[in-house]
Length: 338
Image (cartoon, rainbow, N blue to C red; front, side, top):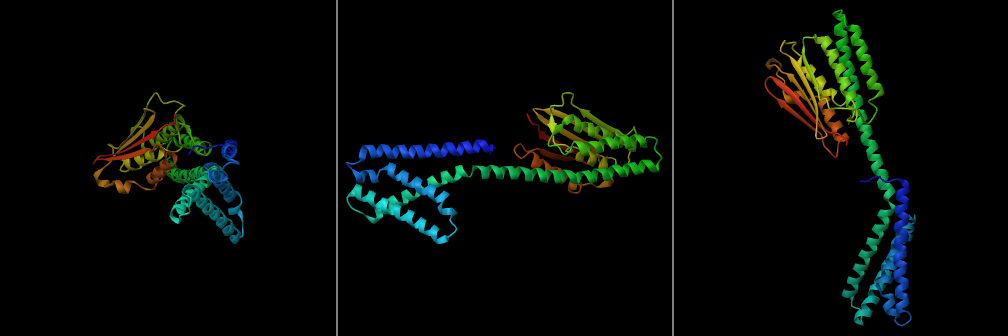
């Protein structure tokens, strides 16, 4: 639904009510000019009088009757409106057929009742635009809060893994431990300074992943088969929700290098085609690990799927998992904002 400003809503309400009342009044005055005083009965049963009465009841019902606190007053006014419609229906039946027939009068009455309710619904809808607008705003804020909560759940998980790696390096007295800490510090700055934003440049998100890969290379050695291939056409104008891609990368390292086998590998390809981000992460699998897709899809991947549903409800993103005996590949496709 299109979001409207308070000023726009106020203008729509005023324009509708003024135009509606003006048309009803104009029709009533014109009919009175042509019918009075020659034919009072025709005037009282004309469409102009009927519409005027329907509008009067609709406005009275919306602005006055339904706001009454006393239930009996409400019942009394509604009963009065019904009697007015019955009287108008009987009068019209008499004018057309020169007599009053219950069946025909009832048919007129139901028609009048339907038109009155239609007028009321029109008035109700126009005057409730700000509430519909407020509902959409609250719905958006709720989805943002849910997405932020899911995003925040990833931070402790990421830091836990990072500090575990740091602990492992410190035990080995690794010469690049200081570089690790420096890169980790830069990544934590990204977590605190950028990830509260709704969208960030894709280049920043990929820079975060590069630092993560550099850290993993320190942990597993420069000889580890780790590839990151990024499309050269990716620029700062390409925007994405922050901290969205790291889950697939973390999973690849967690499972791809689990056995520390010399054949272990992680390959990451990042491309943009037809204004869609294609993010593919492939890693090695080994039979003795016995990884199954249902086991692989832990909290991180489920968290990612929930975030994608909240972030891209109108252009659904796609996560596709491809499993073989030796490899595990995650394909992520996201429509980028134009």
